[in-house]
Image (tube, rainbow, N blue to C red; front, side, top):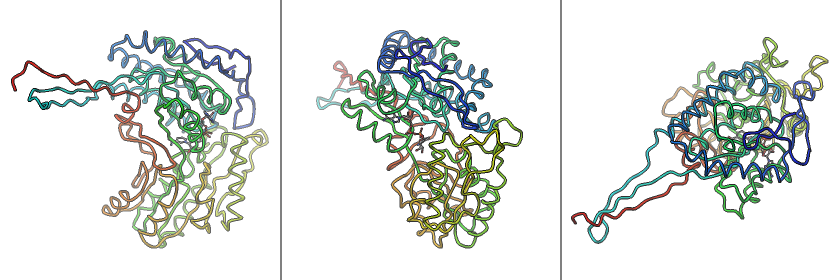
Length: 489
Ligand code: NAD
């Protein structure tokens, strides 16, 4: 049984309710998960409040940062356990989880410990109207008890992306991992205890969204801030439900991210980038590309080479040699993606490759498999080309001129990420500056320096996290103004 982690202890929910944790590779039951009810969420928030005002507050900054380094080291030391848990929950290939998810889970603690150690705050001196000087300086205080609500696509990575900076800034947290992927958040409790993080600093409550742990947590009066990653509609529901409490919110939401390929692009670099951005993690990456605009002279070449790349992907068990492609997370999500595959056909799209469910060996047929898919013939206005699918698929659409490509790329409610492929430096700068997104990659994709700002505009989110931007969200800035009466005018 996967348990809640409250006040440094693993606990079953008081109501004794459980739900199933399913392995997406073959549909088998991994474990039962203990659901947290309102009372359990109350306990977790209370424990977080006591730790906030008690043992966590009494640590010096350097001690807190050293502890976060110890958390990172312990994640590294137990990387195999984290890998096994993450892979069982998500079905993602071992190579991907060991390269991306788990190392980033550890890095998120180191990066923000360093950031908080090195950040300066502002200071001003000026002369008041009576001619005497006044000194203003700012102090950073923790926001308090932070609710961290997470999705299933990069469970440890995205959860620690919030827990790392929140703890570095002196907050305490109550985490609600996705109901699909509860394991690594629960396992992190063992790490916290092993390295001596005071009890109550890190808490985990399991459950679903509405009328379950997610809603109980985000509407709880004892919460001081909410940081959320997930779907845009869920973000809107959380903002609505928490509005009465006037909570600061950080929202990392959905996307329908474009890639623009110009005729002068290095096609090797372009295809390497597109293959990752369309298919990595079975397309279940918020930054993933689902719209590819290609300048007409290279359109056919890009379509064919991307389709070839899709054909080379090898679905299979995560630890089988050669596996490069995992299943979708759940039967529900598989149904959603297949419905979009059907819609694409109705909207006039042609699947150059894929378009259905692959023929898997008998023992994997109950898993949530999907074919990587490349469509042509879809209009930029089609729903398939406008709505977030969150699957391993893209619509490839030709264009002739740079303004035309930019107009299509920006014609969306979302604004998370974009990629631009060109060898023309002027064009790279010009197009990047004109794209209305939080992150633009040129001749690459998902290359993250964790000190940089990350987040979306429009329906893709509110706020920026990363480096000092995370510190802005996870701290309350207090300005102190000192009048120096004794000084000479
Ligand atoms: P989701 O919105 O369905 O669920 C996210 C979390 O919210 C889960 O823990 C869920 O239980 C909880 N939740 C659901 N309803 C709730 C409610 N009413 N109140 C409180 N909590 C609630 O998202 P998902 O399907 O887990 O993840 C996929 C989505 O996440 C995609 O839209 C993707 O683009 C987005 N995403 C965004 C980023 C980013 O950084 N912008 C990163 C990863 C994923």
